[in-house]
Image (tube, rainbow, N blue to C red; front, side):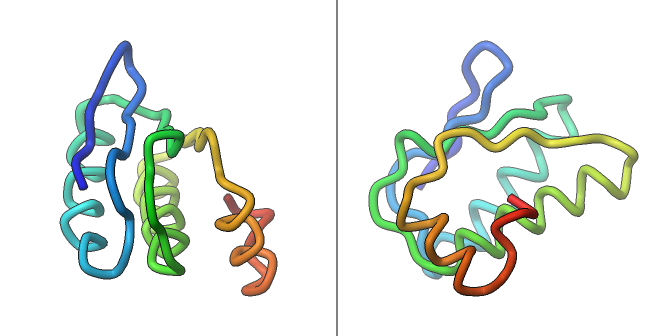
Length: 91
């Protein structure tokens, strides 16, 4: 899993599962600190519930600095998991 920034949008590429979560979080925080506020999941392959935790953590990191994050291209499977955990409205 890598995070590619293009035209101010951070694209997660590859799988976004527990094995990649801590690395993805570090990359996500780094690009937030550089001013990127849009994350796109259209290039993500396999994902699990750790993706929800990652996105919520990135949102909290931005909000702690008074900033907002936009998350694009949430898959139906990720939204379904978020609904199951009662956090869909936070994504």
